[in-house]
Length: 311
Image (cartoon, rainbow, N blue to C red):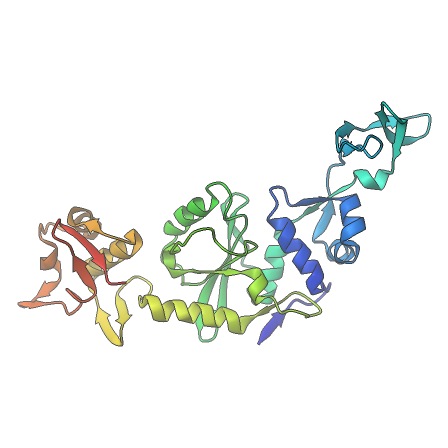
């Protein structure tokens, strides 16, 4: 079932333009470009408050010299208008509207997502990485809670690594979904906290009159993550291949460290994570003379003192 925001309605074409602009470094668009290429979508976004007028352009592309050169615009008091000088055409007037710029307000999109996911307005989004990643709040998805995140420009610079670092510091939040204006990630990565990456474009209801998110897709993505990963919050329980494994607090700390490592990790690091005086890892997984059933099945090792999880 899809959830929609009431109030100002933004058709899909307006949302599509917003998603494109949010992937730009400064999420802005020139007034002339907006008017000539995206008039209908721009009108919707302006009316809904998604676009706001920003600082005016100080330069424009010369239309007189046909060389696509950027030229400075000045105010001409004689004609009471803006103009630039061309060596071939003299002073060339520039309509004031051509100097306007419009900026997308990220808080507008965050509010739209929160409302569409029925997250209470009192749950204010928290910025985790400047201009890259936000925690919007917890949403009820089916019978469970899911963390709803928003990210932009994840394939640019080191944004994806910074986002993963920020999520590592917030392990313990309910597994959820990272909604993004980025259509696909440039490389495979397992998001910390068992969050799943989902392009916003894939879950916005196409053809809807307003901003609607298909909660069925969100539910499928988040429940799929739990089934495949198999870990409860806190790593005290795991479901792997139909088997349920229970872990003590120290065992869970080791499982969490193994899962976060995403590959082989030396036993000394795992013992440190468990804050134990034991010198042999297997001793933590033994009780009353019996070895934990996950040992050798879920927890594997090489011959160099490194351990890793079955993937």
